[in-house]
Length: 216
Ligand code: B16
Ligand code: MG
Image (cartoon, rainbow, N blue to C red; front, side, top):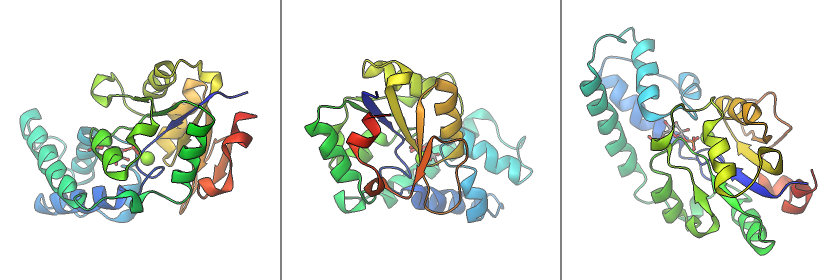
């Protein structure tokens, strides 16, 4: 029997990956690096600075910038990303999320957010679902990002659950690996592409109910 849910944010609750992509693409272009959507897939679930480092490596520029310069480049990308989120609203929740969260609340099932995004609290406010989460793990407190299990273990602990009592939702392979390493059941949200090593995959949360998942 499961007792609570842990959600990734980007690609599970809302689709902000397209805005991350636009902001990274513009920054990369300024640095003389061209990235495409296929490359962008490898950035999903990866924290901001690590994403920048992957882009620099991809462009053969991994040694071109100091730590301070990299921090400034990451901040520049984030300013552009945040601007692209100006009009984010409850209409941007992915299909099935609003009903699923409402049902979890009705059944008093605790929910947590385990996102690599430092913008998560602001995004959840704009989406109108911040009050549905009992805990949001602060990614600034993590020693390691996904695929390390730390973020999901902290999320389970924050809602008072053992890993085996939680269900995690992820859209990125790095996140699925983190869930598996944490010993938390994984539900893959798969729209395009594929996720492997999940307990089950769905296109969106209209395909599975709170009650069905709690019975696992
Ligand atoms: P920020 P998730 C991740 O969110 C994104 O998938 C990833 O592309 C992004 O770089 C990362 O958050 C950090 O986001 O720059 O807003 O702190 O999928 O873990 O919810
Ligand atoms: Mg994600």
